[in-house]
Length: 278
Length: 219
Image 1: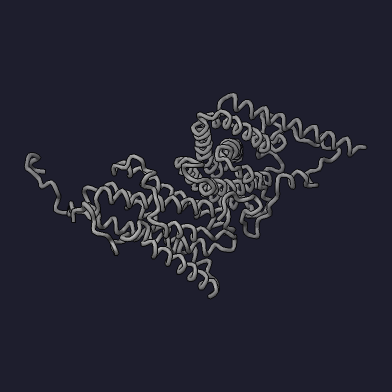
Image 2: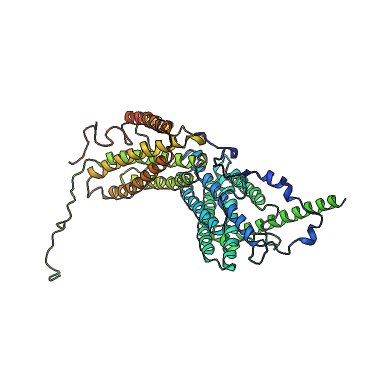
């Protein structure tokens, strides 16, 4: 078995339909109609009051499910791709194995929740952007991209989903999301701790890792889908992020990235609307 | 309890543990070092394979089993300094070259259509050899002086038996044709021959056969 598996080789059964982030952005169904501004919702947060709440929640749950599969695969690959001692400390690999077990349980939970919410495996496309962030050949960059950026996003997603379960009066959903949230805080903390430890005497490597994290964070903001603005479907779960080792400054940086991505997306929409009118 | 001052036998009638054991401190450390190396190779392989198997149920099981073997490696890593090996890496070694070749052959299957070979290597060859080496160690070490190793082996064996059963059931669920049965058997035989050359997880003497005379043991 080779080291460093490309994202195109992720093994799936025939139910899955994989797409890249580029495919997603180029999807014609994402095109903005000329009257989009007048039909735009004032808030995009997932609440039971939204007319499309059920489908949006099912879609988000499927996104969580495929994200958990990729997180499981990414943690597993970190156990395999790096030589113990020379490339990655023994303790770091033990933590990645632990994370693989946690992610396997999250896949199980997501499958059961998807069933509970009435969706099927493969009902929505699988965006492979998460595994792409797990492909770096530097374990420190992988920790920054996966454990801090990706798992940080998971904290935001699970917090939103837990709140949705609470508002919708669904204790089953709320209970499960809360348990997964506890694991994600642990994973982000693992990333924060190892990043600090491994780059203790290598400030250049740490800088590079944090820059990579910032790129991945922006990528995961999906054109402003996560920010403090109600126009974003996800908020930033500051309290849980701080528990996981993010500083207030880091949380503010992520919030700024989200707003920046949102503004960029809105500018693109305006351009498309203008072009459609002409 | 009539009289708390009355002397009692230090070993209760049901406590039949014996002091003698087959392994010296050095021999125990050597074996534990080989166990740790082998458990590490197993958890790394299971982790790597997760992304290569298309079957969702198997993908999840590999993730679960990956952690169990990492935990076993951690237990052995912590045991080594207690056996006077202050640099655990020094004894974290394969038993011999054949053992290295076994791992190379076991981890060779990569393509998504080779799930049978991946599982056969782990659950029909490697894990049964772990079970036999651990059982031999459990039954032959001093039940008093080496109790910490015994305790770890008991926890580990529970995992090994659970995983062995789960893995075997997954293999049986994948074998749908006689050709697939042949494939599984051929791969098992190929790996078993290399393991025979290796002499087991801890080398010759892993289960007491072909063992050199123990040094410093008290049997």
